[in-house]
Image (cartoon, rainbow, N blue to C red):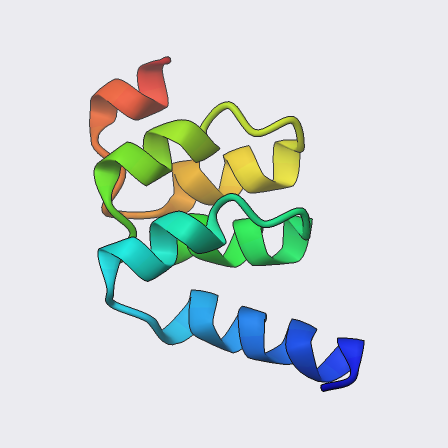
Length: 77
């Protein structure tokens, strides 16, 4: 599978999945674009959103803050 195809599949999984285990695993991706999409997915578990709220990239952290499923305590940290 070419790299571009694998990236596209990872992005699609991050965006469309409602499986907490799949989203938690995708949140550890080395690709910031995958972490960004996991952070905005409303099905991402709170524990995963909390981990992503301290991502080194501001765009990922901002995605967590714009996720309506993020509880206030994550946004305050």
